[in-house]
Length: 308
Image (cartoon, rainbow, N blue to C red):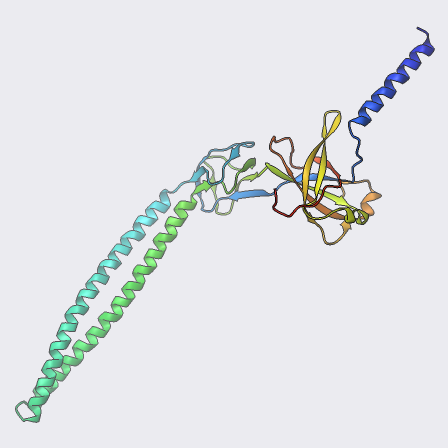
């Protein structure tokens, strides 16, 4: 084979390869962007020593699953002390009720005695001293009854306050269990068992990766081709080709902005664009947060938001 024949064969191979690669993608992208997800950072709701944290980065957790716990011994001891104070206050309240009942009987007797003494005084059958004594006893019993009722009300309020404290401690005990707030994948773990954590300290971060949001930026001219709930395609790199996935437009920005730095070239970043969010299902987990992609508009008809 001559050099001329070799060069000709090489040109044929290169041309065929270019045609093959071009055929992998017969649609030109309309916009570029990245995938993102709603990330949730789970923090400690109570302070204490972290007893367990049964998850690692990459683990899938279910909503409501208990994944760890903070030491509850101090809270349990505090609850016992509060419950004991509540029981003592309740006992004093019961004693106050019994005292009130006895004073009510004494008041009834004192009032009858006062009434009888007043009748005797009118008939000159009793002395003034007897009348004063009967009146004094009736007033004393009345004041004692008033004080006992006030004391019972105060004890009732004390019992109610202690009940609230017990309920608060029970709530803190419940919050000592670390519960996953959603079905998702653990992205980052910040602490290890045995560490002392403060209330509000981040423990781990997770996100639902079953469906990601593709955020792209389109020009003002392309807005006429977009509408909410429109079916579109999102392209992602797959080996030597571009794989397309179906998506649905869920949000279109109402105002323009400059193209974000990571998206385009320096000259193109000076253009005004509109952000668009597209929901893309990710059942196989091939999509990742931050992965770049391409928006491919099509003529798919819009459907009602929430329709399947």
